Image 1: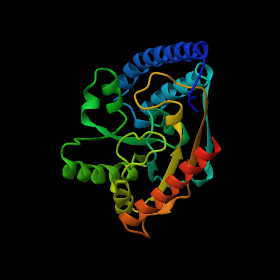
Image 2 (image 1 turned 180 degrees about the vertical axis):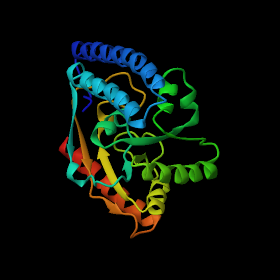
Image 3 (image 1 turned 60 degrees about the vertical axis):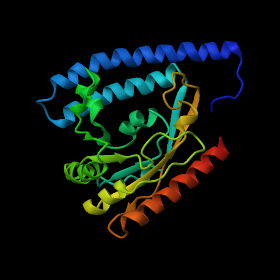
Image 4 (image 1 turned 90 degrees about the horizontal axis):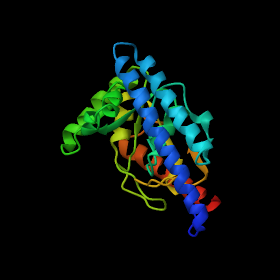
Length: 249
């Protein structure tokens, strides 16, 4: 957990370690991204494997350089059938780590991110669901249509139900788009709670040492409930786990 008071020498060490990690992340991005772009004609699994090398390298950097590791409880709850992941969103960390915790998956992201030079072009090869948030009705329709296609292709779909990153101890409004997608596709919903924001907060440069706790909940059968009830069940489970994680920290 981020300490409320740390010595100046410890703070300097954290700054230096974070700078080394940031440098490694940037350099690895410029190495892997062109490879992914060049691999566009090949099967998705080839591009996924390349992206996974980047993911694993940066998680290794976090562990060895920043001394920031993670533990996962509930891996046995991940079903064999692809489903929708409803995950707490506190940090950039989960957008990286979910890719090694779960089977191949896709994210919902803003269209403009794919226009970023090199990194955005590489991201575009991983079949993301790129939406225009300014047009909410059209964006929801796209999430449902493209999401069903991805699930039928054997890919998981990650949805951050609160829509944006929320600070530790806070809770945003849980939207129902992920539950609607799962209900339409007839696939399971898997809730995920974690406290990554306590170590790598929103838009933060510093990465504090520690162990992020990740908890994966029992899958919710989306064929048995409507979207409102699925969302409510996922919200109750996630927020209860967040309180437990906070008490244990």
